[in-house]
Length: 408
Image (cartoon, rainbow, N blue to C red; front, side, top):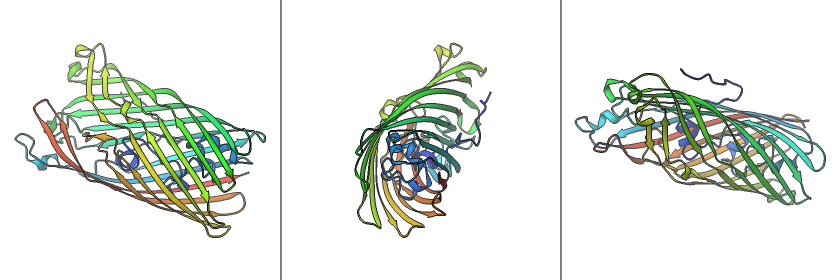
């Protein structure tokens, strides 16, 4: 039985490159706003030009003197191709080729910030930090490691902030994370489903941040979002259950994220912003589904080779006039996942452009776009102890986003 998904209202369908591999390391997502996309998400925890800053640093709510709302939608069009490097036993290496394994998708988000007085503020963010979707043909030769993989998450994130003085602010929040997952593995050219697992869960985490403002033109932020363990409960059908549908469980470790951000307005017209982000992917060691109705209590197990990843971003904003703001950014995402074709991660360069149009003193509209250029990588993944699929992966993506902002 496939679990029911929350639709539209910010429950997000992700794609493997489009929302993770070419977007952020492994299946971490940075796509929280159109304004941020236009600067390659550089300085996101410090710029505070609209309510979407809530996704990166709750302490930045202290920058708002009135209620603010932002609603964004991001479209991701990924392109991931897999090619065989060597024959797979009696099969030619061309049997390992797979094109466009990650579908395009939309990522919605919404934010609300309300100052309560000159010290306290509160806000609510609705967005996602993790997600993926890859799908190979049912008769793909390496179906034991390809197949279908999908993770959808949705984060409800209420926050509070306190302004200590004119320089220092702090903030914190809790995260209610809904997640839905599906994993299918097949027996190569026979298309037989050897593993079919689906389930959902609701788990919890927390986040915190601090901001230091030297003056209105220079500020820096440091934020942290906790890791969490998603404990899925659902249904399993496969070889280890004699192809009977049985109740199964799977724990998925999501990593912590820490980010340093800076914003410096160097003149009336120009500002520079920058970020360094760390994601603790080293916690993700395996995918293991269990049930007392599976052989030896294990329905499915796959070791994962993940390492901590870093993201570096720098951008500039040009304040053309009171109506128009222009921005650009450049970022480098380091690779986190290794030798996994269902999550074909790679190192990526982001090239971003964006703008804001101030409709009136209250309304503004943001548009952003980015091209992500992924480095080609080789993947050696074991189907069995004696059989290894030797592959290469190429990846790129186009991302576009639009956003509306209102200050009361």
